Each structure stands twice: as C-alpha cells, then as structure tokens.
Image (cartoon, rainbow, N blue to C red):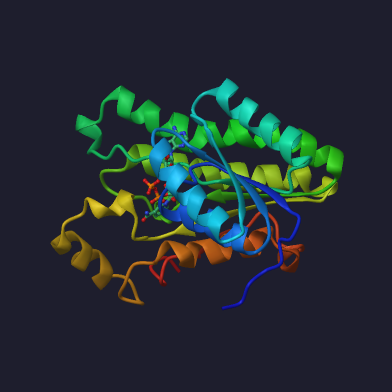
Amino acid sequence: MKTFDHSGKVFAITGGSRGIGEAVVRRLCSEGAHVFATYNSNPDRSAAVAAEIEAAGGKVTFLQVNVADETSVKEFIEAVVSTGGRIDGLVNNAGITRDGLLMRMSTKDWSDVIDTNLTGVFFACRAAARPMMSQRSGRIVNIGSIVGLQGNAGQVNYSSAKAGLVGLTKSLARELASRNISVNCVAPGYVETDMTAKLTDEQKAAFFGNIPLKRGAAPEEIASVVSFFLAAESAYVTGQVLNVCGGLAM
Ligand code: NAP
C-alpha cells in the first residue's frame, strides 16, 4: 500500500471515534502524525481506539467536542495548537443524518443536520484558519458526499449541507490560497460504517447495483484519499471535490 510521510505533522479531525474518521485517524497516526481527534457522545469507543493506536506506537489525543457548538470547536482548535504547537491539517469529518421526506421532515431534523454538517465545518475552518495563516501553510479537507452533487430523495437536509460544503470548499480555497493553505473536499458514495448499517440487505443490493464497481467502500478507502490531500504530494491541488464512490457519480 502506498503511504504518505506525515512525520512530525499535527492534524485535527472531527468525529474520529468511528467509521471514516476512525480509519483516517488510524492511517494518519501510522504515517507518523500526531492526531487530535474528537468524539461527541462515545468516550468508551474513542478510548479503545486510542489505546490500540498508542500500543502500535502512534500518537493520538481524543477530546470531547460538539461541532455544532461554536465554543466547543474553538476550544478544540486552541487545544490542538497549544498542545501540538501548530496545526498542519484539519479534517472536517463529523456528520449525522436525519433522513425523511420533505413533507414529514421536522424543522429540528433540518437544523440539526445543517448545524452539524455545515455550520460545524464553518466553525472549525474559521478557528483553524488563523493559526494556519500565521504559519503560512495548512491543509483543510472536508468530507462531503456525492448526494451534495446529485441530491437524494429523503435527504434534503443532508444533501443541502453537503452541497453547501462544495461552495464553502471552493470559496475558502480562493481566500486562503495566497497563504499556502489548500482546501479540498472528498465526496464518498456508499461507505460501510454505522451510518449505512441501518440499511436493509435489499436496500444495499439495490444501491450496489447502480455502482459501477458493484460494492461499497471500506472506510480505509476514503482515508487513503484524505491522507493524499494532507500530503506534500498534493501541494498543487486546491478547491477540488474528489468523488470516491466506485464510479457512481461521474
Ligand atoms: P459515523 O460512523 O456515523 O460516525 C460519525 C462520527 O461523527 C462519529 O465519530 C461521531 O462521534 C461524530 N459526530 C457526530 N455528531 C457529532 C457532533 N455533533 N460533534 C462532533 N462529532 C460528532 O459516520 P461515517 O459514516 O463515518 O461518516 C463520516 C463522514 O462521512 C460524515 O460527514 C458523513 O456525512 C460522510 N459520508 C459518509 C458516507 C457513508 O456511506 N458512510 C457517505 C458519504 C459521506 P460519536 O460517535 O462520539 O457520537
């Protein structure tokens, strides 16, 4: 497997306790970074992940953060910079779904998804941009979704948030390029995590039928792309959305 060298790098990632975030944390730690990761509601899970990473010689620090809470996010980034000494990369991964058809979607389900999946990213980018600008270097990777590009029945809240991330990514890439900070978006299709575990086998089979590669992704297959966007090898890439979806969106 191709790996990237992140020795001595300090990365922050939201939602590192499970699924895609956990795979990103494990990968970046194995590639030499000190990773500051967050959990929201599941301290036991993050403690178990941290113990395994540390036993393998990796360096990870988990903190409790609610990305929808401005103060919580600001304190997280401040803790990364004060403890790690700098912040080389930020991965905005934390996300939730509250699916339902428009006519039955509550205002709370709309707001919870926008607050967590879009406003939370705004909070984290704003907090991280200042130290990155002072360093004159940095990488931001936002985890979007192909439904932000294609839409999905039953997900007007989620697809709106993910579409918003595309605009945020491109606008911020333009704002920060002169400071040597790149901003990119990784847009997965179907990934095998808790988020998709609730689908029935029938629903999964129907979904996989439409994917040219005929399967979902393992979280590690998203983590490798995130690692690329944080690596020296992608220095000339900014403002891009990369679909990692087995060919579903093309
Ligand atoms: P997941 O398995 O459900 O994990 C979600 C992670 O986000 C957990 O670590 C969770 O922490 C954290 N989180 C949730 N709400 C939070 C909040 N308010 N503040 C801070 N952290 C919070 O999700 P996943 O499937 O890995 O998805 C990760 C990202 O990929 C999301 O942005 C999602 O939209 C995107 N994505 C996923 C798929 C897919 O098929 N799975 C496809 C496209 C895009 P706790 O466990 O501590 O609550």
